[in-house]
Every structure is written in structure tokens, then in C-alpha cells.
Image (cartoon, rainbow, N blue to C red; front, side):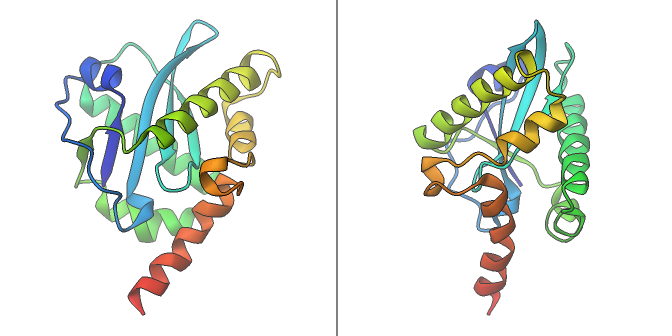
Amino acid sequence: MIVRLSSELAKSLGVVLEEALPLEKNGYLDWTCRRFVCNRRKHLIITNTRSLYSVLALVGQDRAIGSFASTFTWRVQSAMVRAGYHRIWEEHILGRLTEWRFSKTLSRTVTGSINDLVANAKYYVENAECTLADACDRLNATPFSALGYRFPKEVFEGIQSELADARN
């Protein structure tokens, strides 16, 4: 699994990042993470690099990589199960959680899209008074130019068929 961290997040966790690795062939195993502040509290956005499917988490002051990994795993699993993606979690991600590689972000396109996701998340939580789960639902139902104006949820679901095509 490739986990791409913002430089600020990597520094706070004490992680030395590899150069920007190419996109993982299994799109479910490539995620980009960034911390941000909303309502004076630290949050984490965990975004599937291929699809921009995003999960939000409230995080504390912990600066340990083990705590980050636990938050990442628990929040992604919870969001995926809630969205009906439990089979994707079990078949494509769960068995690969011991093989983490930390990398720099993939491209400016991904970074820019995540900046847009963070701005939208802040708006939903601060102004629309959404829960983090509701804000995630809204983020994943927003079309992005980087995806050809498709929805992150739609692209995330499509990764499964891409993997099946690659096997055949």
C-alpha cells in the first residue's frame, strides 16, 4: 500500500518520504493524506489517489506513526463499510495493510483536487453543520475535472472492474 503524505504531515510523524512513487496498479492501495484545521480542531483527509474518494477523521495531538496507521485503518474501514464497500475492503485492502510505503504526493493535479476537497469539507462542517460522515458523502458526490467531471464514488467503484479487466 502506498500512503502519500503532505510534507507537513510527514514531518510531524517523523516519516522520511520516498520520491513520488508511480500510481499503484491496484487503485485501492494508493491513498493521499493531509491534515487540516476546521473549527479549531485538527482533521485528516484520507483520499484515494486514483478516484479522489475521501474519508475525513478528527485527529488529536498524537505524533506517532502507529497512531496514524490506526486512525487511517479504522476510519477508511468504517467509511467503506458504511458506504457498502465491505467486500472491496476485505478483498483488496485488508490483507495489504502490513505493506505500507510512504511517498511524496503524486502530482499537482491530485494536490489541487485535495485542496478543493479540504475547502469543501471545511464549508460543510463549519457552515452546513454536517457531521464528518455527511461531509464525506457530499465530497464523494461532487464531480471533479481531474476525473473528467465524474464523481469520486463512481470512479472508486469502477476500480474493481479495471482490476478484473487487467486479470483477464
